[in-house]
Length: 241
Image 1 (cartoon, rainbow, N blue to C red):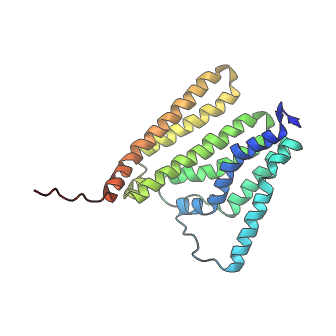
Image 2 (cartoon, rainbow, N blue to C red):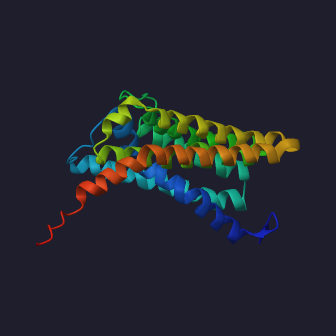
Image 3 (cartoon, rainbow, N blue to C red):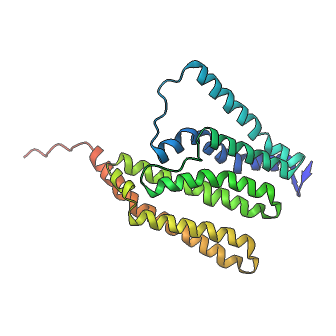
């Protein structure tokens, strides 16, 4: 009942929590998030019952293959379990999110979302096809995929709802700095898995770059948040003289 020095149940649970939770969210919401953010496609208002049943069956089938891949990886074959996750992620994002279509709406953050949609299955495939790079594959997932998606969406929502949607289309300097630093953080984490003699330097670069990316995001978003908060604040009654 032990795999790699740890109880197999613990290994399965860790995989489900660390990878499955966030990857499941990306795959679950990607069907409407990616088309809307990258191509401006509106979700259908009321699909017919037949289409709804087919969509539900498709998602149940995908979930039924994705989540059992973790016990499959721990109990039977590492490569087969990760390959099954890679196949499910690729199929879902191609069929539902149609990531083979590039962004058609202006805005750098939309390209970041589209890139994430490719990096998530790429990370799984990397771990399945080259097991010795499993650590680097996880960096592809978490730094290039999940973290980048979080910052891209956290850029879109405050600016679009805070009356600053024009800044999204213009790709302002803080957004370009954020994208550049995210790329540096992603590259540093990947190189740390290859160049073990300089791992501390690459990790320092990755951590510093990611911190800078969050700072650039704040420079871009905080003014919109303050403007939105001021607009929603109730007017105070003037003091009686």
